[in-house]
Image 1 (cartoon, one colour):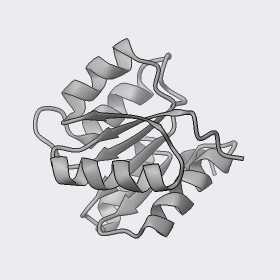
Image 2: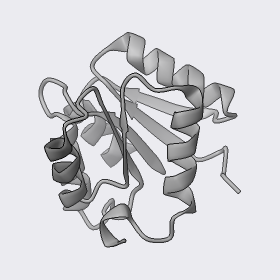
Image 3: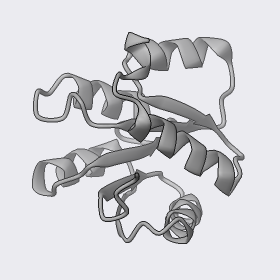
Image 4: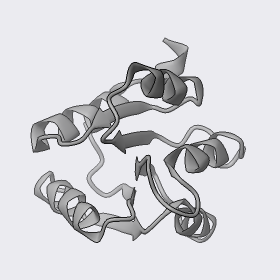
Length: 133
């Protein structure tokens, strides 16, 4: 069963995309949602706030989604943090790069509410990260 009280960090440079993801998460019953405009702001929030799940865009200024993922995976405190990468890039090489960087799962824009929920559930249901399967 999914803990609807968990803290989710939504990271995207587009306010409209953050609002859309926040709305979808709200429809799914999640209430504890924090937003960041880029990886730099997300790192600051991670260091100040308890976060249980990250949903991050790939392409952003300052620190992009891959930079944020590398930060998360290279810090003992966050290394097991579920991380869902969201991107408009469906190129196979990008997926491979994200998997090698130990992303928990990957979703390509545009996506439906059902797809987002399915990906979140898959990450949370999994006892092993995607890169260890």
